[in-house]
Length: 380
Image (cartoon, rainbow, N blue to C red; front, side):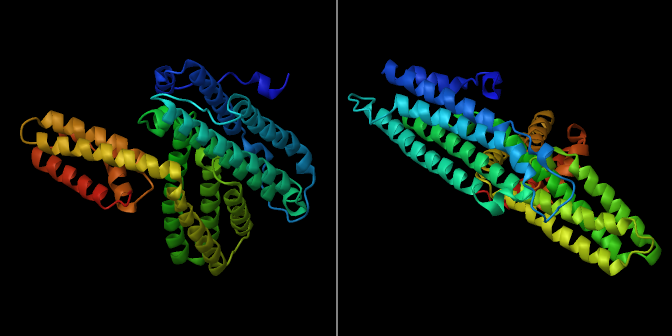
């Protein structure tokens, strides 16, 4: 039995089903439902591949053609999964709808979105095939993994846009309400941001200690850093990193490991390695520019602002209610962790803070501090 046959049928969200039921033309709605079901299935299939098992703990510059044999089924399944959706669109929407009546505009707009999405996704399949015929790609393990990961992520994004943009012609919706797999995608991005932010703090602290280390403490610091990188390698954030970012971690982990087994490693050499690592890890904050996080952060920012306004209005009349609203805002804002250093420090403190036991003046100051931190975020 093929892997595709073993994958359970993906379901549509309640909001997506509600919009489909609201479309007067039931035949059109049925055709659209088939496309959305196929998109949900494809997104799920393209999301469930764990690339970690194909990685290697070392970086070898020699050609690695054996990986091609390992990855060939993954590449084949990627193309099959994408083509399955394209075939449904071609079958259900071969041409413009030609609809008439009050709902015609929405139907024509939706069909137009599907046609354009089909063209772009089909172009991506062609580009994937070209990349897989490039010797410089298929002979290097990390480059091949990176390219497969990049194409699968792009296909998922295009399919998500296909659903969101086509259903938006029938009513006001958010991506969270209608896009299959959206919550999983957001959670993965939030996790990467949070854990890599903590890693950046750990590396910065280690760099300070290495610079100040006595000669007899250099090896110990290298060993500690090795342990810290190993711990990061076991996190969900590491699993969700881009393959090329993992490659850099593996390269620098090897350098640290080499120094950790030397009886008297030179401090300048370890400092140079940790400085490179520090710069690289800080660069991982570019995850904030991912569209899925930009949209998520705006929504969380707005909802936290509303809760804090309510909390401030209740300080003088309902201290328990104000504390509850503040606690809800702090809990929600934890998904912003990693976006801003000062906000991160506040959120770490908030995790330990007994908000319900704060006296009115301190509660008010905490709310206003929180508001100021949110106001300084560039989320628009």
